[in-house]
Length: 266
Image (cartoon, rainbow, N blue to C red; front, side, top):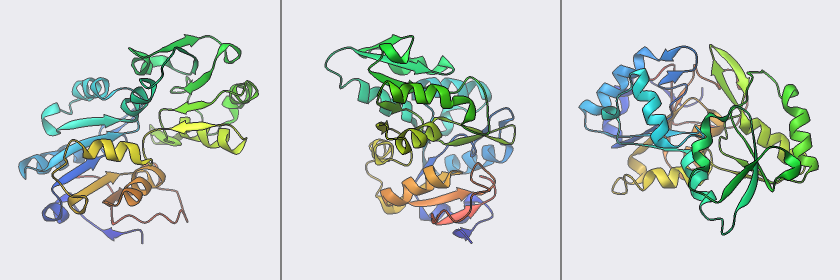
């Protein structure tokens, strides 16, 4: 069994003062909506005055994700802050000392990560200095539809900036490819990748700055991704609760062990 089995989040309320919650797979399912039990989980954490931070691999900035969730019925009053991989990527871009030409592929709804930074968007890999894959324009269960573009960027020797490390997400119950899998393929083919978000330390460290008075021993990460949420929590040195019905439900022999597991958050 992967971790101690729980029935409800109330089983561990006395053990932690702060909770880092993943969004997709814990609070919300793409194409389905807010997970009903999640409302009760958020209510319980708020009722017991726990600090709640949403920690997401979304490549959009936290303020944009907050507006999206507010429109879906997850009130900003139910958590203290949102930290996204988009926020971490935007901070990385701010370090550039001169304009950099960027080829961004995919569905361009996350363009806010390029606002106010010295990044100039271009229309082809051959014109670019870096490659930023955004949410794919089509949902596909494998990398096959995206290989020609990835190989073209590899041929142009573009470093990839991966603003979302999720390899798969669930859309209406089906696993579809996301840019974390692009990054894995890119590295396997010898490309350079700078990746932000879970499981990398930067996003956990950033989230912890919003609750600096809570020691790691009193923090718990709640997520459905073994290779992102849970691995990152293990590496950061905090406990974790794996939501076993989510995107990693079919994963086996990962060697990644959470502290707890539960079918759904609530």
